[in-house]
Amino acid sequence: MTEVSQFFMSLFSYTALLIPIGALGLFRWAMWLAKRIPALFYRPIKNDFDTTATIITPVYNEDPVLFRRAIESWLANKPDRIIAVIDVTDTTCMAIAREYAEIEVLPIDIPGKRAALAAGVDATTTELVVLVDSDVIWEPDVLKKIKMPFIDPKIGGVGTRQNMYPSDGNRATVWERLADFYLDIRYADEVPATTRWGRAVSCLSGRTAAYRTTLLQSLREPFLNETFWGTHCMSGDDKRYTCLVLQNGYNTWNQLDAQVYSTFNPKFKGFVKQRIRWSRNSFRSDLRALWQGWVWRHPYLAFMLIDKTVAPFTLLVGPVVLVLSIALGHWSLVGALLLWWHVSRAIKVWPHLRRKPADWLILPLFVAMTYYMSLVKAYALFTINQHKWLTRAVAVVDGKVQRVSEADQDTRVTATATAS
Image (cartoon, rainbow, N blue to C red):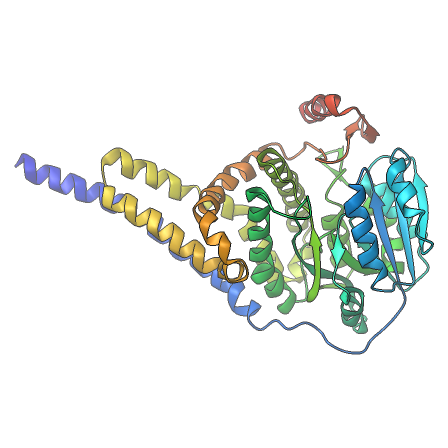
């Protein structure tokens, strides 16, 4: 009788573990297919449309070698103007920019990236303004391709396809390669899907995005004065511009054949900090969009925003089941879980693995980081009112973006969040 009881108890515990992980797995696969299927029907817009365009790049303590490479790649695209809005403290990059006769240098003494972007947009007189990070390297046909969607007067902003560029220009670290994993996932599923269904991409990445100049100029005040729970927003400029464009009745498009390359932090600490900042920006923007209601004019996008908000927390069920399986001695379930995680992730990141076959070797690390990122996003949500840059020594102090020392930055951020 005891052996029979133990058998049924073991069977019950095994079934109790399988049901939630199985149900959750079916749900996550359904959500992936809801993105993957429409993404298969995406095609970039191709035509002969042309118009005038100005490149705006906000510059702050950029690596000089990388800045030169970026400049030369932009010049190869032959824009009508290039305006480098350079922080007055960055004398090195200011000197580099002035070596190029085609570049207009606009020094700025106001801290923060948003002020620099707004100043550049204000100085633009062409039909389009292209916002570009100072470390971004373009392919020779990027400008030509991102102009094409603007043949449609309803399109207000156009994004590009990004991949990782090694920070030292040669060999990428494992954390840079993981960043490339995440980029390929985004540009294989979510971005083409939201572009194809509804022409409403939730974020045109600030690495390179083009907009109608007069539209951005009309959005200056809400862009510079964004707040969340009474605290001035400092980062998340690309999400803010994209949401304002959609909110004002325009569509957004991603031109995925326009290829650019950007650097990422090569160390684990920087990788995690960057993800925390991006997650906070996304939570703030997405929750506001859902609350304000304008996003419901784009049902598919609203559906995706809801899923992005809850998905990180549903993923945490998997590790919980794994730990319980180990504790209960269900080793067959432990093995099946670990195997399935690797197989399922390989299927979902197949476009990246096909492009970078060497990254099969770090697939186990990617699987582990997928679950770790769920904890990171949970932390970001619970610290949503902290505003901090990884690469800029600025912080929100007394409701304003101000310069601070790097040593003082954490103190200022924590104090602001506590007060809020």
